[in-house]
Image 1 (tube, rainbow, N blue to C red):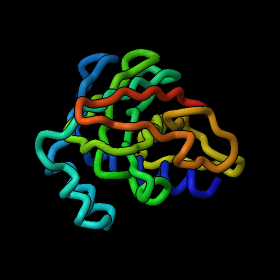
Image 2: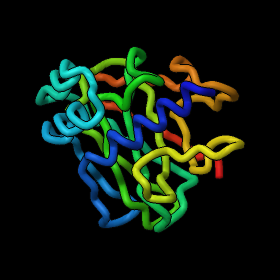
Image 3: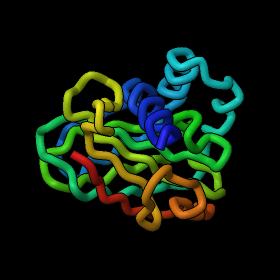
Image 4: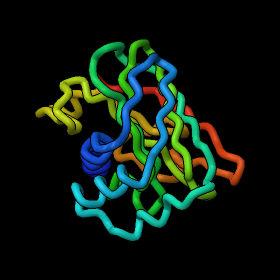
Amino acid sequence: MRSLFIAASVLALAACSGTTDTANSDSVVTNDMAAVDNMIADDGMNAGMAGNMAAGGAVVTVSIDGVTANSGPVLVALQSESEFGKSAGAYTTKVEPTGTSVTATLSGVPAGRYAAAVVQDTDRNGSFTIGATGPTEPYGFSGTAQTGAPAFAPAAFDVAATGATASVTLKGK
């Protein structure tokens, strides 16, 4: 369970430095090099991640259900296996929801295997809040439902050169 909290906390901090589109519940947000630079500077992450943002990568669309409208940004990160539970990943975004579902689009993603980690920052404090009995904000991962500490394999999906889609349903408070 500890790795969930670490992953979600890092995700929330890093995604807050990304770009936001608040137009509607089908917001489309793309990463840029400045957001990655901010993530590296703000979170002390490995500068080598900036190389992952090479031009011409795939587009990954993440559909998120279980969102509470107008109750804080939805923070989305794609994580490789080596990043899972340790860092937000090189591909993060933030979407302000106006409905009970949102769609986040991340571009420039190299082909590979990733997991999507999502948190709704309902208290708008820029981090994943954990109370005495566990998470107090909704969170979720792509792939199959998991109990206990999340693992990469059940959350993972393949991103081809042509792109990929993933779905996440938020759970928790």
